[in-house]
Image (cartoon, rainbow, N blue to C red; front, side, top):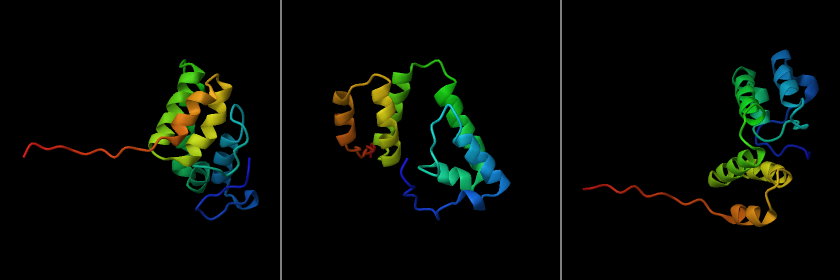
Length: 123
């Protein structure tokens, strides 16, 4: 995975506290692939009191549910695109393709723009 483009101050493995290292190790062990300090994981590692439980919940949802893999990837990509979360959409698209979704599906999703909602009131 390429070096992090995080807006946070870069982290170095040798400077992590024991708590940060524990979160780093959990994030970078199977069944996940090596993620380093990329995406939201840098924030999780910087704040291990919040990041540890957050990554545990994310891992449980991703790896310990009976939902078919292709459905999980559709959900990840659509939500990531809706919120214009470039990392999430970019990170999940290869897994979506691996789960059997076609590039024909991913291209329009990648180009989609988030709609702004308007609230109507009865005045």
